[in-house]
Length: 176
Image (tube, rainbow, N blue to C red; front, side, top):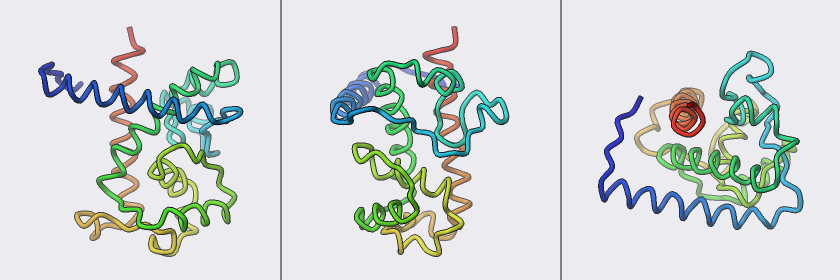
């Protein structure tokens, strides 16, 4: 459990976070029908995990997805996008978004154009890192402090961080 100290700095961060999520939600309204964030490696239905190792949705979100309203789906996407971008931005630099999109199209990997390219990158590396010879070919490089690690090692760190943040979010907002 993370200690929470509420002061002006935390209030400013919370305000920025809420404003960012609102802006992201407005961007999502351009989608005709919101598709699932599933990337085809579900651990909630396969292993009974509380948080999916693939798409980072909570188990109840995976189970109830088809009953959700568009607004509920937007809220889920906003949370996943925000947490993913927050973690990946410190570990990768995307220098050519067009290359990244081309590779995803070549791999027939569905992505929402309204989401952060860091969210796309996470899904792509989760599912297809074995098909990528070098990050350069997808328009991406590791941040300087991670250049001495393999992509698999960085993905392990990322997924641990995402799981911790998702778990904290779940405990704060859904566990009573």
